Image (cartoon, rainbow, N blue to C red; front, top):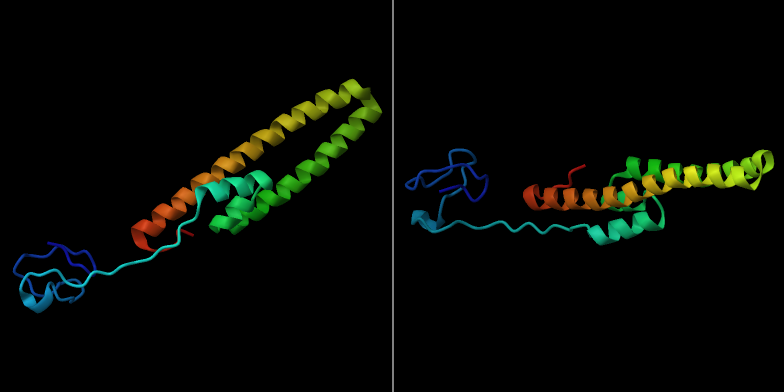
Amino acid sequence: MYCNNCGNKMNENQAFCSGCGNRAGMGGMGMPGPTHVIQVREKSTGIAAILSLVWAGLGQLYVGKIGRGIGLMILHFFMIFILATVVLASTIFAGIGGALIGGTVFIGVWVAIWVWNIFDAHKLANRYNDSQRESGRRPW
């Protein structure tokens, strides 16, 4: 038998928990004590992924990873700025062929980071929900 309040292991004949002092049963007759219901607000993994698809870092902000979300948003902004700069500079100095090569390589890296960001937001939402279910607390 385990305490309904703190989860400590108890003997069947104990009236009170030795860990927290909670009554083991109602009237000491072995009936279960009051149960505690914890309502948790889960984060939708789908919404987290969609937000990160729209703009990198939004899904991380949604699940409460503020620093990571802001960092990814800033990175996303700079990637757009750098892409425009790379394509413009390549066009000026190497012609259209140089712009295509430079732009394609850069876009490949950008897409890889963006896809990782979507999966990361989905994973963080799952971790958030697991923590809420287990302890009733946010993980971060």
